[in-house]
Image 1 (cartoon, rainbow, N blue to C red):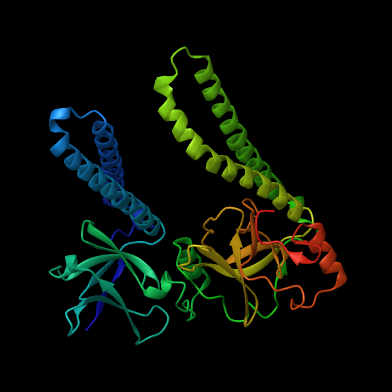
Image 2 (image 1 turned 120 degrees about the horizontal axis):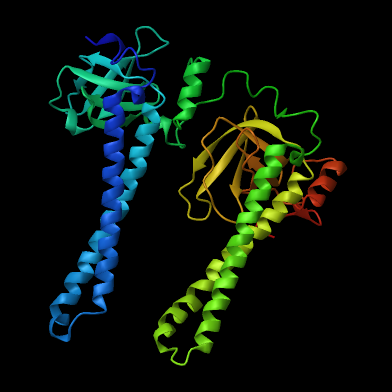
Amino acid sequence: MTTRAAGPADPAARTAADDPPTTRAIRHRTAATATSTLLLLCLALAAQTALARLPEAIVSWGFPLLYALSCAALLGGCRALARTLHTRHQARVLRTYPWQRLNGVLRRDDDGRHHLVLPHPDVPGEELRLPVDSRFENAPDEVWFAGDPRFLGVLALPGPRRMTMLARPAARDSRLRAYAGPLDAGARARALAVGARVAPPAGALENGPAPVDDAAKVALDHGTTATGLRRSLVRRRIALYGQLAALTGFFVTISLRDDPDPLLPAALVLLLVAPFTLLTAALAAGGTRRLERTLRTYPWQELYGEPEVTGSAHDGEVLVLKPERGRTVRLRAVPLRRRFDAAERFWFAGDLRYGGAVSAPGGAGPVRVVRVKPAKPGKRRSGSPEADALAERAGLTRNGRPRTWAY
């Protein structure tokens, strides 16, 4: 029978990261994964550099060997980078939840799979199961767990040792229905803080979008929004004009050299790469100007929503807003794809028929978005003439037709 010890592993620690051994373990894991990433990427670069300088006597066998070594090192560097991101997520969980000492909670099913079985925090008599990897097959009776069994957590042996992430499928997979069971405000806030998916509370979608500030006529009236937009515009202009200045200086240098031959390979690479980087920077700067136009037209509204990974190369990740019960609006970022912040509620300024601007609560990082599948002009949802005029003025439509790209 499942038993669970009362109290955290360290009664004086509010979270697991407040425990000194855990803090040292987090630092060591982060440093180890980051160092391995750097060393493997440096090895791949060194192998690629050595390919062009092989003596003729060993080209026949040295080239395939170095090429295979560089590919293996690059693949290992990418995997080490993924482990680094995974370690950062572990640290995020440990900074949110305390350690709990558990006894007799590891079980093995008839098919040989191991699970961590814990009682439901709010439903007496109900148990929750989290899959456990093979490293805990021969684990002792006592283990440490930091997290919420309804979503995810970190499991470790006492110490802590062998820290690993456990998660229920619905806590991460947007294709599954998010957890909608009983959940108090504190547990909801902690789950959202570690990036778990949580369904809106009961009755939250009945009243529709809620105005953020009745005193603010448009989104740019918020100081944080205006500051974030200004910084974004400055960064993107620096990226665009900086590239233009660097390219101009480089080619002027080539034209003034008496012997430009050593720089010709670099010039060829720049001619192939520069058009794409300049186009990306120009689209980003132009998209920020259009975002400003939207923020000068509409006020912020708060809606429930969640990011969704589509698995499509075209859309990548989209944001699903829920303006009312039974209705969802899917939005994608333009002109550049980007990931949305993990949150339960979002601020939206625009027209849900076409798109607009989205930000996490606070309005500090607005992102321009459009609907994934906007309605056709003859079949769109009925809107008042005033709403159609606002969409035209904000640049969401042109002559009544929705704009679905950068311009």
